[in-house]
Structure formats: C-alpha cells, structure tokens
Image (cartoon, rainbow, N blue to C red):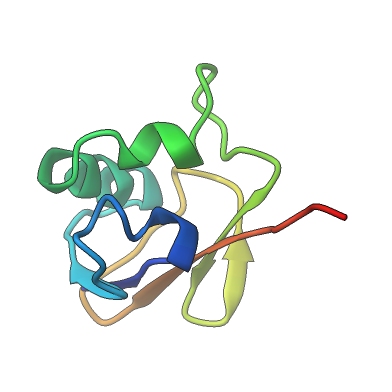
Length: 86
C-alpha cells in the first residue's frame, strides 16, 4: 500500500514523499517501513508501543491511534507530524 511520509521524516526515505509498505495492521505497516528505512518507526512510536503524541496516522481519511487498526492494500496510510516552535 502507499504510505505518505511527512517532510521531517523524509531523511529516512532518501527524500521520498511516498513509499510502499505492507501489513494487516497499522503497527505491521510501521514495522515494515522500519525494515526498509531503519529508525523511522522510533520517530513515530514510543517505547510503550504507542503512537507518539505529536504524530498522526491516517488510514484513508480516518485518524487512528491504535496500532492494531486493520489495513489492507486498498488503503492509503498518511503519516503527519505536528510542528512547533516560535
């Protein structure tokens, strides 16, 4: 399935905004991404296995926080990262 990568994480994907990954759940998709792009999952998921507060994961147009949420190849996953500063 297609996975959209936010600009701050594109250093892991050699600048690619869209990559391919597979899995039956959001967590499996993120694990597959990490096998292809080592270190990217840690930027999205904390040590307790939860999506980090500043990260948003969308399956199609629906925001999900549960890594056990089901996905299929027909879905599109979009990862977004909140920016802060001042």
